[in-house]
Amino acid sequence: MAFWVTYDHAGKLLLANLVVSVSVALPLMFGAAAYMTHDAVLITLFAAPLLFLAFCAVMPVMAAGMAHMVKEIIDTHDGSLRTLFEGIRLYWRRAIGLGLIYGIAAIALTSSAWFYASRLRASVPWLGYGLSTLALWCLAFLALNALLVIPTLVQKRAGVRTTLRLTAMLVLDNLLLTVGLALTMLALGAMILLPPLFFFLYAALAIVIVSCAYELLARKYDARAAAQQQATDTEHINTLSAARDTRAARAREEYDEYLDRGFRDFLFPWKE
Image (cartoon, rainbow, N blue to C red):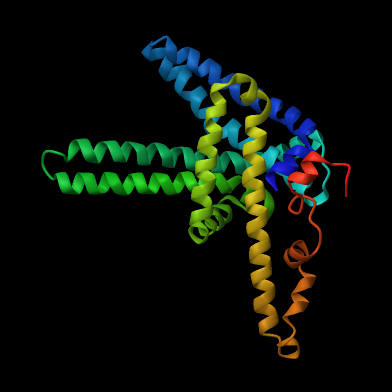
């Protein structure tokens, strides 16, 4: 699904990626420049705030705009760059709230992992290493949640608290899929080392992948809910095929432009 979404809408996704990449890169470059001076005052007053701003405010806001654009592409098989800015307008407050929560939690857990291991190593080493390990596991779970939190926000249009709860439930119920997404993001992370790919493809491809993953999860839960509802309906207890009325079942039985094409369609796109 992610391949065909990207393939069919590469032009607009490249433009959106450029907008997102420039917006994120500007505070990152200024923050990195201040950090490279090794001046404690500049690092405290400029580098740290700019880097925190980039990762906890600009990045989630731009990701929400991109996810809103990808949602329109998946739902309507069409989209425009205008939708990117519409998504930013709709979700910027909640996206910043989520970014701040995740950023502060990541800093706290990272600091805890270092603190307990170093401070309790001499007196109570087993407790120190145990608490540090727990903090690292919590940090890993936080990272997995971060992959799906923006698609959850855009799809459900819920508040910050509800979005956090739904994302955690999704990750716990689909842990293997989420770990696979994390490994995919790590592989894509190598693209950051190649500036042309970073500015023209990385952000768009990452958001497309996680948005498509959320879409398939939504279809799975829609189908499960339809089956459960049908199973409790005494009038149709033996005709579960009525679940075909749901979007998820239609996606399985009808032709899906993003799911049902193969390598032959890539080589011979003019053939039906």
